[in-house]
Length: 113
Length: 114
Image: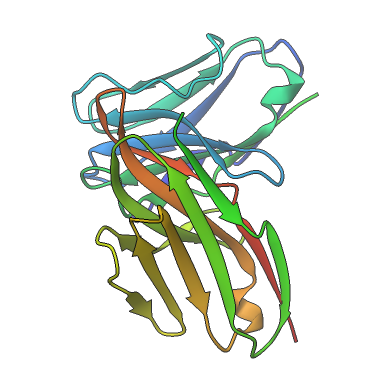
């Protein structure tokens, strides 16, 4: 597609449920990033994929969070046993090589009741 | 721990004013500094700065990096209501052996009144 696509755009779930968020990066972009943005806060780094290298998972806040990426295409961010503090907008971005001009998706707004 | 600090956190000005947004950073292995504009959802790229003292300019926006002071400023002249947004500063560093991690500040929320 023309840009980074994320789904769902909005997700409301109950505490304790698992959620999956999907990101379709721009075709040909080898780098893919997940960030989280809580109300009034900046972007909190979660995880970074670059080509076939091992992902940088240093930003994942707990072992309830995990992410996968198939080759240089789709990525899925999974949050298990969601908590209310997980409520945020989850932004995905891709880049042709490494960081620099990141192209962001519109985000997935997660609300945990 | 690497960090990026922006100031002010919020700013209200009137159309026609000139504003200066600040960004300071502490990172172990600096590679570049970037500015983004976030109006609704997706941040959009403004500038990438790698060399100290060289101004990047795009229309009414300009930015410069000071590696000695570990900081950058973003200037907006003759502000318009359409400039209202959150301006995000990010620093690219090598972190934990990985290449290309972008660390963002909390942003400056700019409101331009008619």
